[in-house]
Image (cartoon, rainbow, N blue to C red; front, side):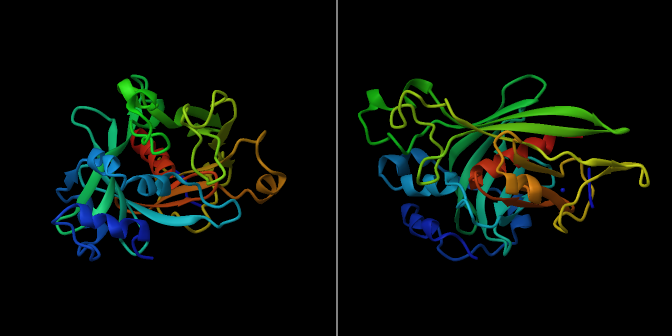
Length: 298
């Protein structure tokens, strides 16, 4: 109990054709080295206009199938804590986040391979919505659902953004200790598993149904004199960033409540290295962004 928790996807392989100096080979670095590397970034707008990014972004947003087991990934932070790489367990980078100068807000890019490492974006933004950094919003200003409509009809024209997750932090007293907790609001899912967050294509009742996640609470151990939680052997180091999420009790199926299995688990394994396990109703970029908001926890 710890408190205080196959290669690159095929959909990325064809994307290397867009940039002359991108390589289709796997990265030659361990992802921890990539976390400290100087990334070359290429604008996502060109790819969107060429119609080459719709499948790419949809794949990052699509939730795990309802009955699928958790996908197990790794998050590695740079030494200065300003860059973060989400990778497969074999070290193949998938998504990259960079903190903006003089801000805690982050831009999220799509890793596309190459040496030096290259990324496409920013595809998503993770921004604090208040000065205390207790409320965070994951959004994108490019919508793959309505991008082929005339500009005047697109939902993201005029500076508008699609909201993909809203994450609220709080501190709770549990037993004789305190724990950071969170609540997460997600858009409902379409039949293809992507978030229904486009007012143009998803209809006027968009937002009426939300998916709600909340922290699994640790328990106070009188014997240990501390808060404890089972991380199923995934987290091996204590960290204030270790946490788990479950469906809100009023939305959870009975089997979820009985099993106690989380829909997201984030836990430290070594210095600057964390495991990230997620399953339905979360998509990859949502899980990554939720985990990144804990970088302000102490």
